[in-house]
Length: 89
Image (cartoon, rainbow, N blue to C red; front, side):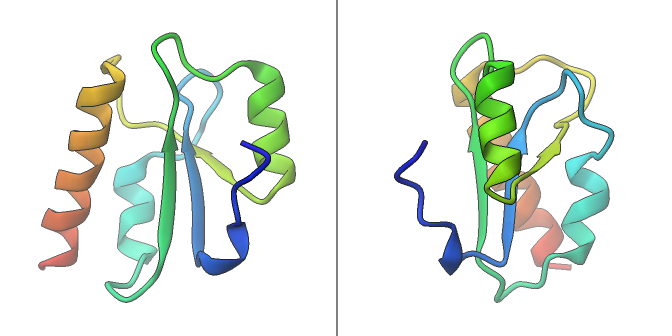
């Protein structure tokens, strides 16, 4: 995580359903098609609280992908699909 170069991104998001009050659905409308967006999806079991604190300190916002708990592989496909759908409107 410490090697992530955040300067090249307009939006820094990390999927963390445990304490997030923001949903991807509400934020996606603020992201323009030409914006560079980085969304981190944690491993099975999610990020630790220390990892989330580190990422938030680096400028990431925590987001929820919804009420369902998704596997890491499924979450990545879900996020890509949501972006594709919302950015084509």
